[in-house]
Image (cartoon, rainbow, N blue to C red; front, side, top):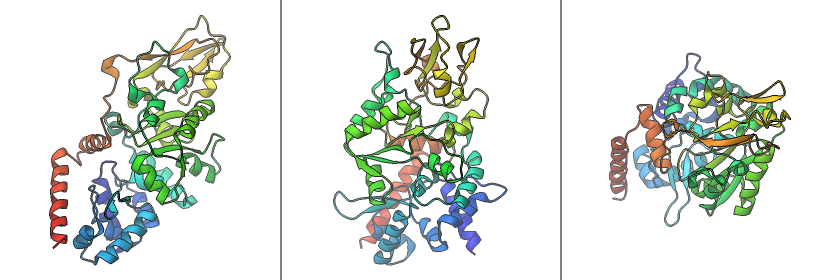
Length: 375
């Protein structure tokens, strides 16, 4: 009976945009057993992608509103579901996909067993073909690498993305933390993931990060450049987070680097270009590149564009300005969804799990349940 409920939950999570595919080893079920009690697993099945008040979910689960409220708040606090604090009225709750979502919400309560299972599961969880068509993150250049003559759209500039928000929070990088806990970490800053808006509200309520102001958020971007971290915001023009990633710990960079021509798998509008005539062979760019796209040959930096993701880390510290960024041909640039809802629909559609029509159906069912629950 207990195994059945975790299998049901796994299938349920796999229907969400980010997916939760099955494996031959059953590692995904081990992960769920570590995170959810059987009662929590069963109750999670009653949530949808539509934010709903406790009395609506209570009716669906056939329990009292008081009991539903208690369970929902506990599960939100444990990072198993997502909650939205009320601007007015009651708190609303919705399902959370596993990545990006539940996994990241467990940054403060990791253990070696969960880390080991995730390391085994991540290559299956991250379907490369799906990521290529509908990634959850995209790559933008660090500010100092952007030349005044380079055409850059507002949503391709980290500073402008930050400036569009009013609520800011910095959280630990779960990738660097998990690696450090098993003795494989690096010395790059751990407190470096920026979260904005309602996402920052959720992180603050659950003690997952530290509220900061806009000025500190911009300083963190500068520290990321200095530390050699790749900026990867949400794959939307209106973002909810910016990850600051290293090639040794980031599960996305690590996974994609294993494939031939990994640059083709990233959503990035830029690529580096090099001038061998002016290069002095200092090797700074080779050390800073998180994608192993640069190497020294005969005291000159050689660039492999099939590895380059246009992050600008090599450009911002090149003493001879031999490295610059160039915009890719339009045909090689991935379109960026307008907002997170569009991004999730696109991801779900690419996985064959979600469509605009099914989202409309979900909204209609939620309205019906809300109406019935109010009687």
